[in-house]
Image 1 (cartoon, rainbow, N blue to C red):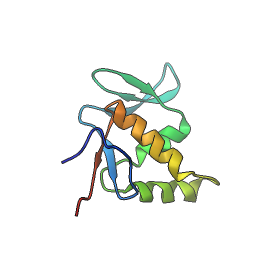
Image 2 (tube, helix red, strand yellow):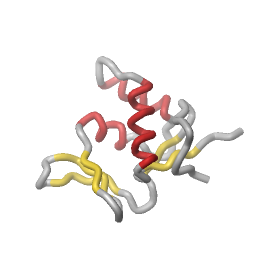
Image 3 (tube, one colour):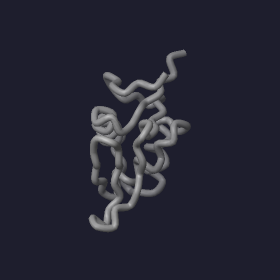
Image 4 (cartoon, helix red, strand yellow):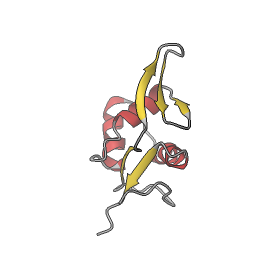
Length: 99
């Protein structure tokens, strides 16, 4: 079962958008946003790149590796912190592999 408030984001966690949340381009702001019934989260280009990879299949390690192939410097801890913030705002859920 997905968790909405993990204590930490691990490399093996699989993030995905929470139910009722969608990524869309806001023409007025000229930026991508996350829309949910309770809030709007305005994303910068880096945030958008991370969220686009949150499909519930890729792990955090996969997301960091994919970003690393696109950008010269990707800090794993920064990606995890960003995702933890979105989990705290109930925009992203994280599925843990508790095997």
